[in-house]
Image 1 (cartoon, rainbow, N blue to C red):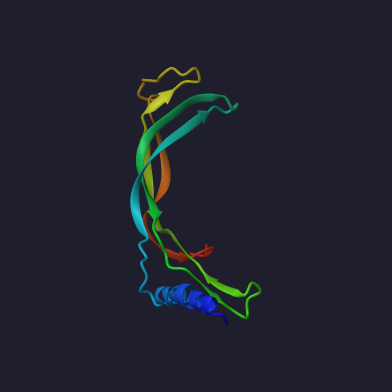
Image 2 (spheres, one colour):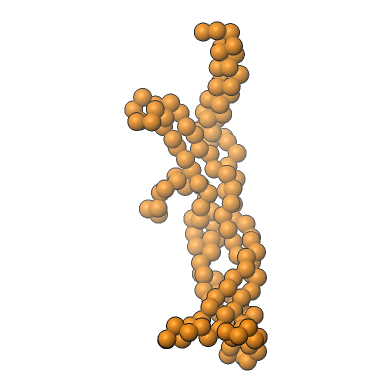
Length: 141
């Protein structure tokens, strides 16, 4: 092994191996959390013949999962790729139904609807209340 190759192994590969080892022991910098996010919702309502009756929209605050989870890749003689991957993703661990009122409603011509029964629309969505790191691709929970 040449001096340059040896320096590469010591300077580049060793810190990566140590970092992977540290993360695999649970001392990494995971920070998967539930955060507030503003989104613009649009909902269209159609009659039984498929004609649009109204469209409603609003800017609303909902929860989202965001953050980093510890993952690692290590050499392996068993796997076909030569590497064993352990990937973890920040995802919801609990969802709660939330009712949101869309307050800006319009007819198909774009005229604002102001009557109490047509001027707003309630919709239901599920948002995360808790987030944590899960093994990527694991949808069994």
